[in-house]
Length: 263
Image (cartoon, helix red, strand yellow):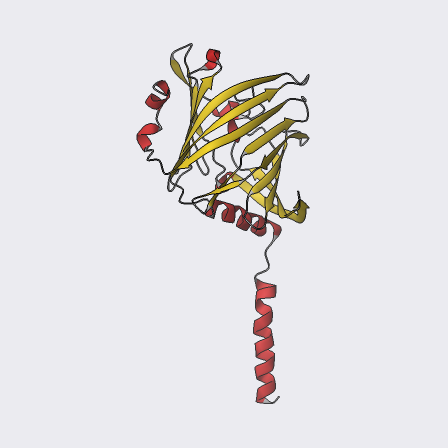
């Protein structure tokens, strides 16, 4: 064989190596997408926001909660968050503290003003409803990458956006879900919709996200989140506003004592 032919064959073989040796499996692609979502949110530091929670029962009757929300980014661990209820009067001062973790169960505590004590939320009860809403306690921690096993399912459009569709299965114990199906837009890697399947693998809830806005020229946050429970006919809407970033929150703002003095 002539030398130039050997060179051409070698070059073609090298060109084909990435296609044959580095093709991603659905699990690898799903994990890569999840890591990219997480990477794009790194470095925000801390933030505060206000939200209105609207609870709607099967008959369409509505009730409201008004909440302040604080978050602290923690390097090497999951984020810390503090939710403080301002209205209505009967739950004013109720507060919940969450320490999210990549693999271990999240730590969560609630301060109940009527009892004047801090109550730890058992890891076995994380699938229970939060303050009568359609959000479970386990929905409220930061969604760390290592919390789930991933699989890319397909690409499709959602509300006109080109999206990845992933399946993620909880890697932690006592979850109320067998799996979740997640729509992520390809351009900005923002979660658009999540379907939650119960322990019998039946569709339980669907959460949708909308009115995203960008802050500090990098960080996207939704203006609203809507959770519909298909099995009960109830729903909960979270309307977010007044986001502020890097306001100077510290570790001392996120401990059990901060629950009691939250105002």
